[in-house]
Length: 56
Image 1 (cartoon, rainbow, N blue to C red):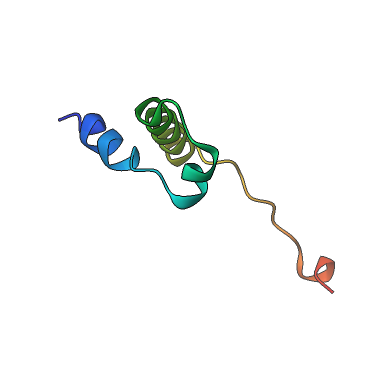
Image 2: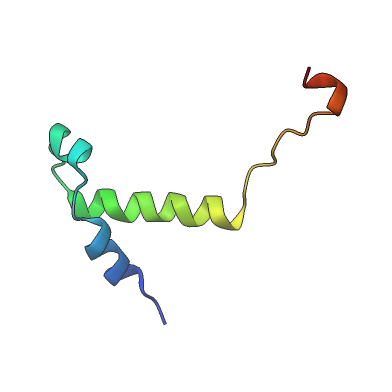
């Protein structure tokens, strides 16, 4: 089941900061935001690990 259209419709409702810049294509913007989010979820960037002696 592909829920992308439903997710896109929901995400296309602009956040206040997005409304401030007035998107010309909210659904296209939503698709790209969701695509990027999915990509980051599937392939997260490695986090930096510090050794205890590096934190002081």
